[in-house]
Length: 127
Image (cartoon, rainbow, N blue to C red; front, side, top):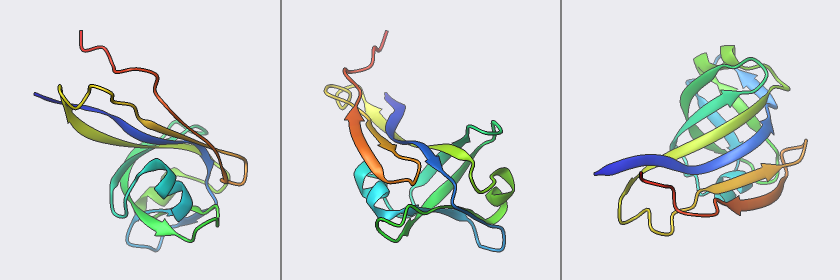
């Protein structure tokens, strides 16, 4: 059996742009994506701390060290510039793969510059 667990999180990033007239996606600073291990076009969940909106989209790589967090397309209606977001990626793991499992948790300052990377402290309980 496979289970879905958090693989990576960008914690409390600040929205820098919203682009309604765009095909869709979320443009994220390339340094942040690399730090989290999230790939281009990978599915992500976005949780808006300011208004409680939660939605799914995919990533596109933004310029390194730009601090960009741009929510695009229809999802732009769920976010305002300045909103604080949690961006999460999930993956499916087998029971065997969970041995030593730990998500990558990435933290930023108020300019979306990476300040810390940590991991969960232990394998999740399966009981």
